[in-house]
Image 1 (tube, rainbow, N blue to C red):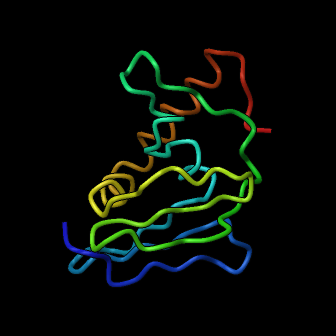
Image 2 (cartoon, one colour):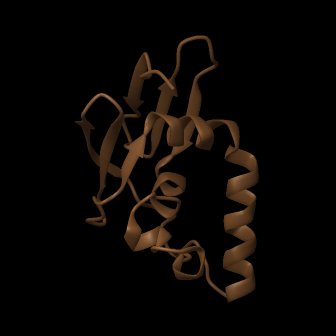
Image 3 (cartoon, rainbow, N blue to C red):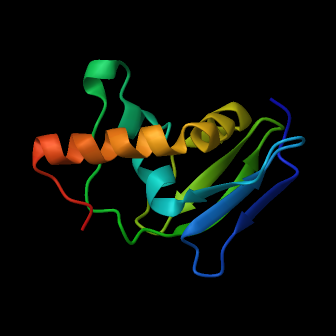
Length: 116
């Protein structure tokens, strides 16, 4: 995947818009990026270790830093900053936004957790 042509964070810091050449722009909520972070803290080192992260409805993006030519590191206002979001991962999140978000909501419900 090539680098995005635009990475933009909304004024309220709760939405990141990612545009790739030849694709529609993807709007990715900060909450979704936080709870689906590719970090080992969230994803674990195997599927069994993956963590369902609750109570992030109001999380915001504090900072975005380039990581080489292939990714960005997103720092969230809750202090989480260990996820490296590759262009491929951001593209996948954009294309699979509805399915991944619903799977997250289903996990929360199954575990008795909430977004608040």
